[in-house]
Image 1 (cartoon, protein in one colour):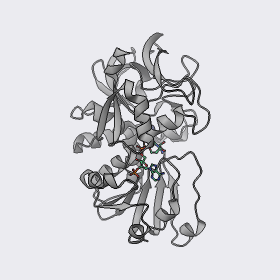
Image 2 (cartoon, helix red, strand yellow; image 1 turned 180 degrees about the vertical axis):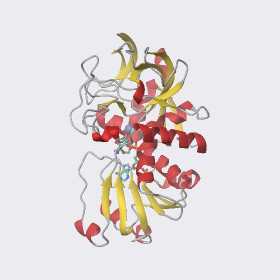
Image 3 (spheres, helix red, strand yellow; image 1 turned 90 degrees about the vertical axis):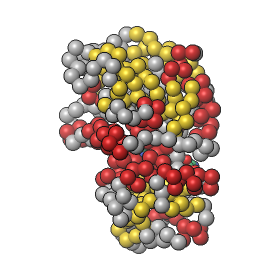
Length: 349
Ligand code: NAP
Ligand code: ZN
């Protein structure tokens, strides 16, 4: 066991602050990683503030990790010292259940989340990526294409895969009309992927100031979702809508924009249950679904796609000392479009 620097919250109402946490020494199949960058996901904020239920404190968030391999266990075959690698929302699963057999580790009943989950090795709970280093089983360590900027690649590990996976699964290709709701971390990646897959992309935003960016990121049209007239123009026309909104909002107004048999997938996870009007689904045989990150094979596929197509996140790189300010800005939808923490700043305090 060794100690590493980290940022943790001591309670649902405490700011994140500098601390030290234990990490295990790499065992047989483990990879030790020096963390270079970690993205800030809105899930970190939901979790830190116990919005989804009580968290275990102290909590060290962070599941968009890019770093350099510093040590490997004797049985590791997939990675070597010096490699640029990444870790997302999962660090372990049983490897034997039907979901794991299909490469869908995110649905394994015995999965271990990167932070806040029971730690099989050290006891207590797992600690995430707002830290100097992390030790992870090689099966959950991904390869980062060399041409990608590490700071801008970090958000691919959650915002990237969470939007890539449902868009792929829904068969989004050229000619499909796709809506992306909310232009934050997930949303802006959704726009980039849907555009890259050839769809006609419409962004729904509550922030007039983001319209120009939406077009630059790959949208064909932008709709102010709080303007009923603008919404009405698109009634019954969408093949697919991906909803990334983190707070309470009107999903019925969005469902009504789907064509017959259209589908809307929720990836945004507001703490408060959403009200769904049955008739919006019944009339038009529309469906509402959900999607959770993506499995390890698909996450590698997504990273390779990003490498081949030069897709990364638009990031604002911040030092760890600005993390609490960044959380407040996230709540105000004031992020363009993902915060990426430069972990070298942790060495300063
Ligand atoms: P984010 O960067 O804060 O983006 C959320 C966006 O939602 C905001 O930028 C804003 O976009 C829009 N929004 C916020 N409040 C709104 C409101 N009251 N009404 C309408 N729109 C509103 O957050 P994120 O990191 O992308 O995460 C989004 C959500 O996905 C979070 O709930 C997170 O926990 C969840 N998540 C789920 C998964 C999964 O596996 N399913 C994975 C990661 C994250 P505009 O300014 O454009 O309106
Ligand atoms: Zn996330």
